[in-house]
Image (cartoon, rainbow, N blue to C red; front, side):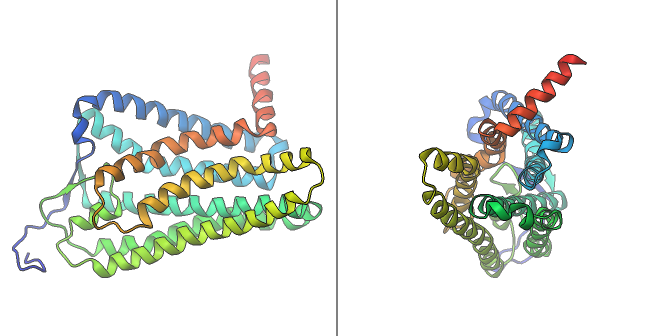
Amino acid sequence: MISASGVNQTITTIFIIVGFETIRNMEIFLFSLFLSMYLLTLAAHFLIMTLVLLDGHLHKPMYLLLANFSLVEVLYTTVTVPKILDVLLTRNKEISSSTCLVQFYFFFAFGAAENCFLVVMGYDRYVAICRPLYYTTLMTRRLTTGLACGPWVVGFITAACPALWISTLTFCFPNYIDHFFCDYSPLLKLSCEDTSRGEFTFSVISWSLTLGCFFLILISYAFIISSVLKIPSAEGQNKAFNTCASHLTVVLIFNGTIIFMYIRPNSHVRFTLDKVVSIFYCVVTPVMNPMIYCLRNKEVKEAVKKALRRLVIT
């Protein structure tokens, strides 16, 4: 194929994931570390989903949204981590272009859904603190179901546009993906074609979704802080802030890394730094989130204790 620059290039349908070439002698250590964190992530999130499903005291909008958030985090990490582990253990770095595209689509879809879940969880906290007397009236089963389904729909639809566009591209040698999974920028580096229009479209989508969600969360917390400051007692203020602290912590960690990765000029940014940040939100953050939510939540801790007592009795 003749590229846009007039150079004859060979088309490829197989990619090589570079991964962590600079620290090859640490592959077994990294495999053990990432596997441990992945298994802990699965165990923690499945525990949350099981508790919400079986414990009647957790059949509330807040925990139903949390269970959905846990499910999307499980899927989000499962899209990338198993291939990372395969690369580290077996050094099987080949991946077909179709598999790579599927990985990119679901990674983007679940990431977008996770961002949207943070928005609806923020809205739930707003209603609970700013409109407590109307909470049960406003957060009906129908609305909760809509809030739980909405992020999934938004995620799958949002990811479709860039994924469909990438599927129309042709890719040339050298076929090395300088990353440990099929992300947007590394894929575009392999294209034989001019990708400037697609990059602009992706930037618009990324900016709109990420900053839009972050802005909505900020609005919720502006109302929450305003309401909390009107509470006369310091004890009441602390209790109200504690109900939001875990959610706000997750929001800041997740959005901080996402904004760095996708809402910044990336033409001259080294992929080595991208890999470090990506590891943080693909592996580290998902294992931290259940701890952040559960350690600060009395109802979840009580549900865990109750489940443990049942196990001991049986």
